[in-house]
Image 1 (cartoon, helix red, strand yellow):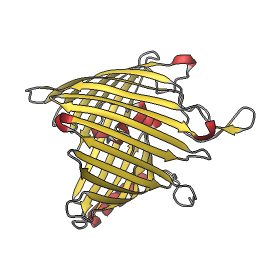
Image 2 (cartoon, rainbow, N blue to C red):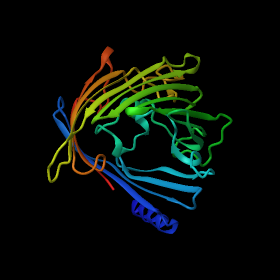
Image 3 (tube, rainbow, N blue to C red):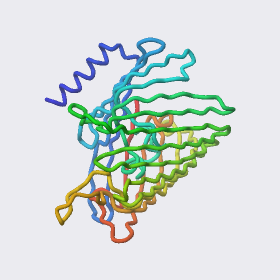
Image 4 (tube, rainbow, N blue to C red):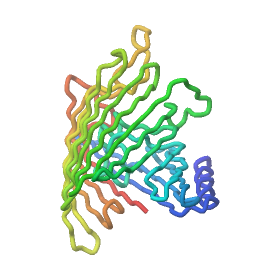
Length: 334
């Protein structure tokens, strides 16, 4: 009943707001862990968002996921003001994905693989409440700069959250001719009593059916509270157009990503009764191979077939769902 009321309220909001666009993404999948010989069906996402323009200078977005691993989550809820006629300057306030990294910024329908990279899921995944300013320059090539300040309260801790500490994030993207793009970004967070600085550099080439991408992230914890974290995401894909009534494109792809021991920045009680940062995600390497069948335009209706091979060095402990697996996912975006 609670979920139904939430959905009804969201749809009524869209009607009252006169939403110009309503979009959604559905991802249903089956996973089979080869060593355990166990499988499961899962609805990974059931997202709905409404976007529109109040005027030429004011826009809005509200997005909710009705089934983010079985939970309802309010994701984006913001107003954007574009004071210049050419829309190069944008001020955004509300709840949003912070401007940081390449892969963590991809919406589920824009992902190349069924499961997100370690950068996008564990190391660089941040949504928060705050404000950001973005501007696009022309320096011979388009240069987009975004910078913002945020609470650090996350999506659910806003009500009684007050702080003298401000988190910040900044991102710069340069788009070069012939499909090359370079992104630099940094981010400061304070999940508990330790400040964490993250730095990210990534680049990709997207042309002639190819997409080749590499990204590196380094995470530093103040006062040596936890050793620095290194994370890498790299992949390549190639599109083969298909003249078929149902399948429009076939894309073989391969990814290598890794991360060292990672802490989410929140202290946990230790065996001796003290509180300190500890390993939340053990170091791991992963090789993913796959095939994507595009039933309509790219990133509109895809079938993603992936095999993930995990490697845990130094006796790392694998979480329940972080093991070798075969994944078959159906994604539909409307």
